[in-house]
Length: 288
Image (cartoon, rainbow, N blue to C red; front, side, top):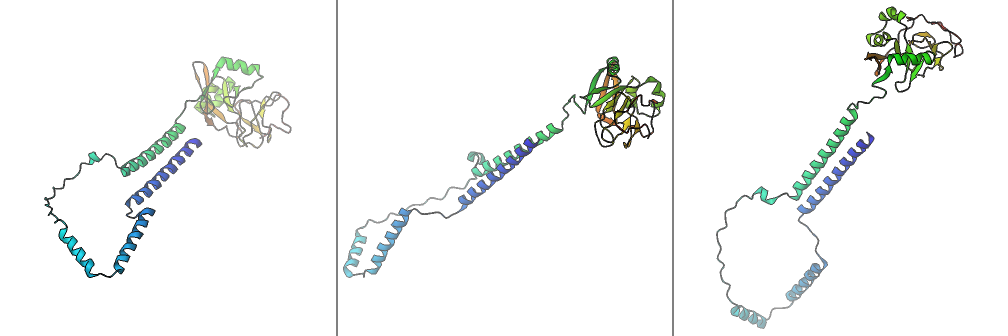
């Protein structure tokens, strides 16, 4: 994006320079004054000296007679016959082609339009959705049955870095309570036995790791704790872990990482899970 902005600035500067050069040339063309060459000035000074010398010499009778005789022997000037001027006809504009001024004006307008077009295309290209499959879009996690098997193999927790999410199992026995607490985009995954939790702690955004001994999520920054489905159990966090909108299509578990849903309020406990062992973070408690 920065490259396109720099290109637009360069185009505008170039247009300004072209306009200044064109204006200077038009000013020179309209001026009626000019510089005389040194040879012309030398001839002019010589002519003035001769004229001055002739004016200083007195006129004698002999010189006057010679001038009169020269005028008598000079041939008579024949009269020049004049014709009536031809009527004026407006010139054809197309016969002139393109003048320099028109060329400069059209060039400036063309360059300016080109610069705006390039800048506009850059903006549209930046804002146009790319259809990427990375974070911020819908990501296919795999078959529901395969994910449940991976969760069991990883002692209850499965991390997916491409989605920045923890995938855990949601017990079917907790669905009646979940239906009164969670939204349809969350229930779509829970009914399939899965939940996708955002890795960030809602307190100050630290990445929350799992604790295999307690079977909870325990934040190392300030000690907030959450059960296996992200419901808050203790610490300064203002709510449970945020989660993503989920859907199941053809047995495929899909996580919409562009739709983050705020975690459940403090006191929510649909699964009734308590710590199953020692805490990984010192001082963690199960209180609210």
